[in-house]
Structures are given as structure tokens and as C-alpha cells.
Image (cartoon, rainbow, N blue to C red; front, top):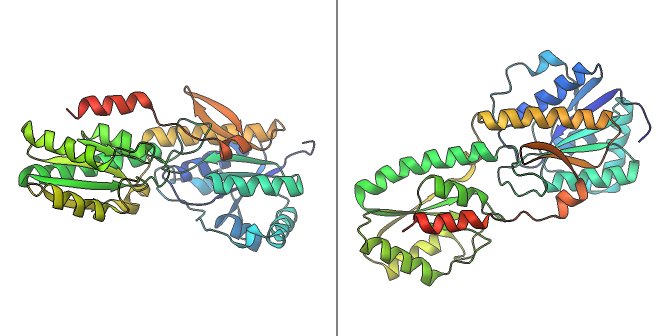
Length: 328
């Protein structure tokens, strides 16, 4: 990459996550620190196609570090999947004199960035923003820590009523393909069982565990279930199965849903977003492209976008063992 960078565009794409605003703020202010321009792109790639841009400076990102969601909005763009859409997006960037892109999002957003770079040799840098923590090349994605704290807080409240009424609560959390939220929040909230896509617990073992809990004197139980767990088609079907096999339990279902994506980001996510934003901009200024900035062993590192997209995050086997021991 040989061209001089005078202006960087920043966008948020895919599902929103707490910490995205803090990352936008970091990108904008790092650009200002290095005396280059910064353009905010509304509604992700769709806004890039429609030329929905805004010049951003240090004061335009005042008081957003504490806000969830994204001030630049997010949208899925079918148009960007077409060569015509990407051509229009490139024309708009050239017209606005934008020289490089920082893309805050998940693997779908990074796939689009990589394709855009391959077609137009346009410098791109990714910042991982998703509560699922399912992107290779970083131990933490933006929003993951906040989502964990939200889930634990809610489960604590549910446990109060579970204990009062001797109930079994099946609590579904987000995690279509990864069980990181369920596993960590389950341990943090003291769940009796945790069901995740990576491990097939099996219905018989779940029933056996619940029977043992009852026999050892537990009057209430919490089972945390990732939405992608394969043990039942839905959490409600799982409830019906438990009802029919363990009539001694009064079973309730709670689906936490999109509340996990909202709320003010935790201090950890705010600091992480600030570090990732600085690294993304400065890496572009050093001539780098097609990387994702991430956190590994508390160091900010670069992972090739292609690896970030194709790599698979592994569930922590030690945490699984801790979970088994704690559920006794």
C-alpha cells in the first residue's frame, strides 16, 4: 500500500454491540491526533453505497463512550453483495476523498471488507464487534464482557424467584454457533447445568443431573442454554421434555433475547474499544491492510482478516471442567 492516507472512513456493520461507540470515538480521535480527516459512514455498507457520510472530529464524539448501540447505525446490505453495489460504494469513497476504511463488526462485515479490498485495492482494517465472542484472533470481542455482566445480573434476579418458589428455570442466552456467553455467565451465576453448541450433553445426562440436584437437597435450579445448543429444537421443547420426565420440577422458561446486546458498555469494553481503535488507525498509517485488530494475552495484535473469518474459536475445556465441578 503506497498511497498517502489523508482521510479514513469508519463504519459499524452487522449486529450492534456495546463498545461500538467507544471504538468509533477512538478511531475519530486517533485520526485527529495524527492530523488526518475522518468520515463516519451511516448504516454500514448500505450507507457507503448511498453516500451517507458525515465528517467527524474530536468534539463530534463527545459523550458517546458510555452509550450502547452505535451512533452510526447498522444495516444488512444485500446491495453490497453485488459488483454494482460495491462499485457505487467505491465511487462514493473516492468522491469523498476517503483513503482507507475501519470496519467495526463481525465475520460477515470482514468478508465484505476483504472482497472490497480485492476488487479495488482499498485499505481496510477490522475491529471485532459482536457479543458472541466467536471471532478468531482475539480473546474478547467488543460487547462480550458487557453482555456477560448483563446476563449474570439477570440470572441473579431470576434465581431469587426460583429459590422462593422451588422452581427450575431454563434460561436461553445468545450464542447461535458459540457457547462463550452461556459457559462464562453460567459459571458466574452459579448455574447447575450449562448447555452449549460445542458440547452435546444429551437429554439423559441432563435429566440425571437434575435428579441428583433434587436428591442432594437443591430446592431450585438454573440451567443456562445457548440458543444454538443441539439438545432440543427449542428451549420450549426442552421444557416439555423435562416436564414429562421430571414432574416433581416446576419448570419455567426465560429467553433473554436482545437485552443482552443493549446497555452501557462495561469499563473493560470501553478500554478495549479505545485500544483497538488506536491500533486500527495507526496500523493503516503504517501501510498495513487486510488485518483485524484483536486482544491476545492482553496485547493488541493483528490477525489477517482471512484468518479471522475462517478460523474457529475454541471453547475453554478448563472452564467446562470447572462448570462440572461447581454443579455438584
